[in-house]
Image (cartoon, rainbow, N blue to C red; front, side, top):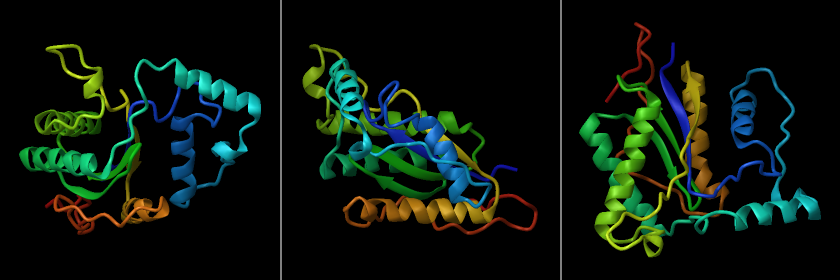
Length: 208
């Protein structure tokens, strides 16, 4: 039984089609297999400093082909995103066990809900975008045509891992909580994040 999800929401341009670093979706799936204690597999993802000159040229060409600049949010913009997340979580009674908003992607651990996880993610992304539009700090606002909305700041798709036991949920929460510091950023604490209360004896996640 699925009790929660670890989702990764990339910003526009964070992972490119045919990226020489490897398949991001495949990497996430394999990383989680290793991370949560299931049978280990070889991780084929490369870091940027491991790419050959030819691979770096290919990646630069892919970047140049993007319609808009890669999105990397500032600390102020991250706060705006968080306000949007909070409003949507309160509106739909989402339980968020962990959240890390980083410049080029966001990690979340969500409890299972009556909505499918894809709908939850789309609503959270939409709420954050609407809040940035309201505040006026959308990262691609200078690329909007007069009278139109700016281009999409989030990638079209998210990556998700289904969490079916307490250990996997706690591992995902710990990973997300460490993520900012691992990238040299301050630890993040958000008011919309609820502590994980465990899975009750009936086998259902305890919601807040």
